Image (cartoon, rainbow, N blue to C red; front, top):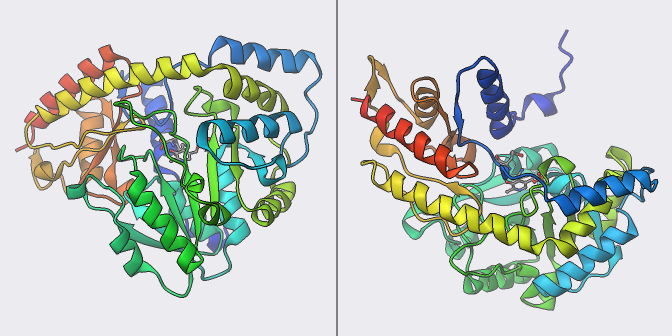
Length: 398
Ligand code: PMP
Ligand code: GLU
């Protein structure tokens, strides 16, 4: 029986999540793989947040919340957006979701009509393209150049615009490249979007992970006109090591947020209520821990980039944010291991997994086949051991 819908047949599974399951299976079999594929902090959720989660359970915050999220959390988000990002939203223009992932999906479901084009800047996170397709839209991939450190190229974006362009998704700090967009570039993008009446969906989930003293800029903060066409997406997953708590949020134009709420009311209802309660603690009382994690990531980044750039053949731009390195491995494509040709970065990652016992994500997953993603969300000790393994494995390629 052909029971699977065409809609789902047309989408690819999440490469990042599939690989995480595969590595977990291999480690269960005792293979001792070092994970550089992880897209989540390896730290535990801070104690003060856990305590608030437990308190919520004991105090009966275990019932449904309104679909758009509990008032206490939406108010905390509203304050956070004003104080940290310089954007003023009242609670009615904010929705709490099951992770930032659902905020992005809701936004696309709320705004895309069949055939609407949504611009995605590549390299990009694995889920944008599939979400756009699920929402009936058409993903338009616009590649950012590695020569320019994958920075925002307005001219390329302009060339991709048509009368069906509905929205553009941006992600700064970026997964997988680590690029952080500059103020001037964001201003130009904002002006272009206002002029052409295009929505900006700004995925700011890595906001707290910016290095070298740089500061995060929310595009919606740049002017009222830009704010009126921007949906800002964020969450507690990466900043507070809370990936499994599943709390994200979006703030944006009132009518778009209300449409997202309408959609979510039939899809999943309000997000987990104890996790919403604990997220208030994350947003209001956990800066120290977020800063501690950032400092740790920065040390690991230095170690990893240093090792990668010494390996020979591989070049890696220095990431300014998030916790990923995205080196170019073209030099190794076409080489052989035991007569088997490494045709693409997928083959290279498979080889590094089986022979090198390290897990990386192939660039194909991010629409950038000459690169691989190496997450430095792992201990300095494992980074050092894993980079030894990588270096030794690459030497076996001829
Ligand atoms: N956007 C990007 C760029 C991500 O890397 C992730 C990580 N999963 C998400 C959104 C989704 O975050 P969440 O876990 O809060 O759903
Ligand atoms: N965002 C993370 C990653 O890119 C987590 C997995 C996912 O949701 O894709 O690996």
